[in-house]
Amino acid sequence: MFIPLYDVNHLKHIRAQYVTIGLIVANFLVWAFGSVVPDGAADLAALTLGFIPAVAFDHVVLPPALDILPGELTFLTYAFVHFDFWHLASNMVFLWVFGDNVEDALGHLRFLLFYLICAAAGALFHGLINPLSEAPLVGASGAVSGIVVAYLILHPRVRLWTLVFFRIPLPLPAFIPLLLWVAQQFVMLVLDL
Image (tube, rainbow, N blue to C red):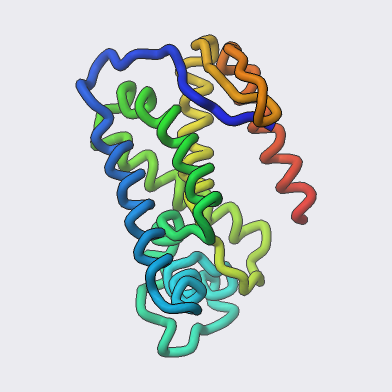
């Protein structure tokens, strides 16, 4: 539908978006590590670090070899594991474009806490919708969704350059593409039910 390219919204309270950059680097490092390990290790990472609702809600028990983390940690670790480069890149583009201004509004530490809380809330919401699912949830989409909604609330009228239909660059008020994006997320949720 659209790809955010950049916004015309300069930082006002912080000099640099250290936490946003740190989260992007952490996500890329986890993906890079997973992409250089032998075949099957990426699937292993998804099973050990991903959020599995049936495991989190004690419907299923992981084999001992895969049960390396307390189940509560997977509410956060899943957000740093991605299936492939494009999955990672799409999440990180949204974090790059919108994260800096949310970090600017919240400050570094509160932004990091907000990001982690959004990740955990995304996992919980996913688990509550399908508590018996044994498929691992991976990716930063839950955390990034929280950042996008925060940006929408904080800066609805900021000029956002977007690539519409992957071809047409357009400057739009942020609320137009972001509300469409939120609606798309709900449609995808309903279709997955």
